[in-house]
Image (cartoon, rainbow, N blue to C red; front, side, top):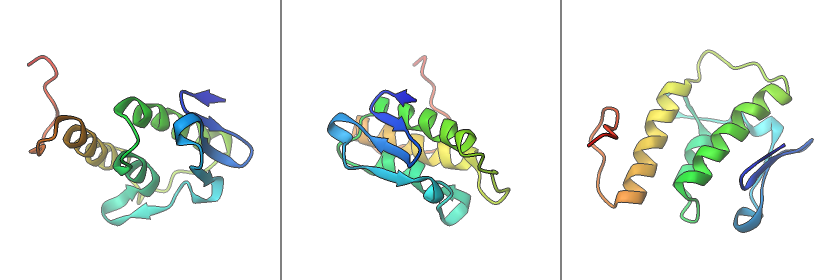
Length: 108
């Protein structure tokens, strides 16, 4: 299944096009960082050559892959905390300013 520049295969998630070379084995999907964060969702957001759209496409591929590989989601990992951190990273990359907490008000 393809999600923009990401493909979920029998191996795991692989990058396509300009993201070729990114290969995440299915047994690495639950790698974690401090604070209950999914490592790959943060790592992809931090990459310099990844756009905001690439990040959101990766999120879809990631969630799809968890289901595709029948991976149980551990209670110690938090999608909400991970996405809050990810949004902050993407916002700061795309707006070249520091994001100061809270949800973004997209109407202003």
